[in-house]
Amino acid sequence: MPVTIKSSREIALMREAGKRLAEVHTRLRDVIEPGISTKEIDRLGREMIEGMGCIPSFLNYNGYPASICVSVNDEVVHGIPSEDVILQEGDIVSLDAGLIYEGYHADAARTHGVGTVSPQAKQLMNVTRQSFFEGVRFAREGNHLHDISNAIDAYIRRFGYTAVRDLVGHGIGSQLHEDPQIPNFTQRRKGPMLKAGMTLAVEPMINIGRPDVEWLDDDWTVVTEDGTLSAHYENTILITDGEPEIFTLELCEQ
Ligand code: MF3
Ligand code: CO
Image (cartoon, rainbow, N blue to C red; front, side, top):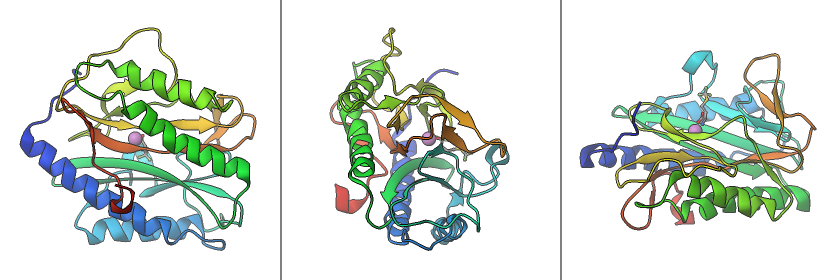
């Protein structure tokens, strides 16, 4: 599939989708505290999304059984919410959420600390978030896709971290996953040229230890092979001829 260029109508709908998803993340952030189950986070997230008249895009996607992916500590992504998983002081938790508004998708992830976390965990979360912005500096017309990948990897390596290789970011629009794939680690090739009107989900998944991951028996939950912490940060963005527009940024962060 070629990388699609969105019309101004499509862009307007994706902007609205993004605004709603940013609000979901703002509100979910407030419910993160020791004692909450990951199932309850999913229930609240689904209620928020549906309350906005939107569709939770992850629910039943390839059989995924929830609306919010909740991944704790060494879980990288796609954790399945459970009544039996209770957040504890010092945990880090990644929330990945997606919604559909008027046929268009937004996709975004945040990693939060539960109560007070170790300095190591805090740094991992900050560096992962910052790596997104380091990559997105290069997200403009005329640059190449892998300028984003290379910038993310170069930044996180300065801290001795590694980028997960088995999972990548993606184009997004009327489908959750569109071309191109967006790696978070250094690429030899330049990748496709970026053009105004492309919409991308850029999502670094960063480990303190080795980059290798494995899948749990539930066939969804991705964990680090060495058991070290992993963080995830993702936004849906629009390529323009100048600064990219970040559709899913919380208002307080802009
Ligand atoms: N944000 C993730 C992605 O971009 C989550 C989708 S996987 C799902 O791939 F199955 F849970 F929907
Ligand atoms: Co995504």
